[in-house]
Image (cartoon, rainbow, N blue to C red; front, side):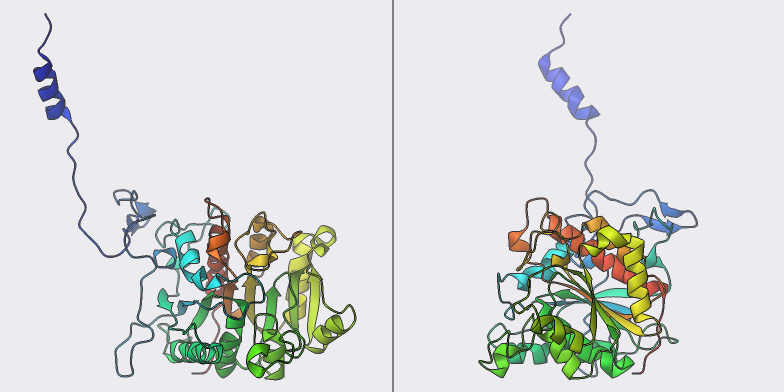
Length: 379
């Protein structure tokens, strides 16, 4: 005997899975809760990749730039965006880099970050890590914008850290074009003095402002290709600094390289990796900067355009994402007092977000290095 269709429809309704809605929240869903054995099942992981307000790696947001007299939650490592790209000489778009890198970090969560390589979750160790949002920068005047970024770094780094033994918080900047590294180095100088810079890039970035800028004006001479020259002039960096991944042509085969050496940089070229291997590159970086405090600046164009197409001055023949991450992780034990990932211009990325995913992983590596080695500074 055939059952009436209406009965089947009613039975289907009765047997259908009940739909429930989680509490409405203005921040990302938490991936479960921590227990003795790690993540406890039961947390909702279905929406964490796309719902709620976006911070780097779903970290808590703190208004680090609150007015004087306002109580601000303490932190040990601060993520801050620098949406600035009017110091570029090629394709613009890196002002959207901070947003792109945060988007690339959507699948990273403090609760779901146990490394398969070392079994650790650096988000859940001693350091309190937060996202401070972006520096408020004008797009109409580079001089004013860089002063605003100077002040942003001074304010964030001047607050007392959460860990009383290591009173100065450290900053990781999401760029922004590479000019944004200059205010960061000025800030680190205030707390740690001159530092060694490990500069991952395809370009030297030590050009004389009279050359790259054409001597047109002081304004034109401060850009993403001259900031290391200026940092050297200002005494912000030590004579133990080093480039890694260099492969771009130079304007003058004699002058540019001599000038770079005068700025006290050594060079590891991109193809040196073929002969040295990753461990050899790691050893060179450690030997060069031994006994010093280190600032690590990563221009995403150190990667080959196959792995990071979304950048302003892409250069073929670069490193792979895995090679870069392995080298960064191999620097564990260094006294890293600051870092950045710059020149990410999401408009040139592909639908798979290749560049922003890579940039987010580089930031995670910088966080790992900072957590591995706490560093004392002066407020």
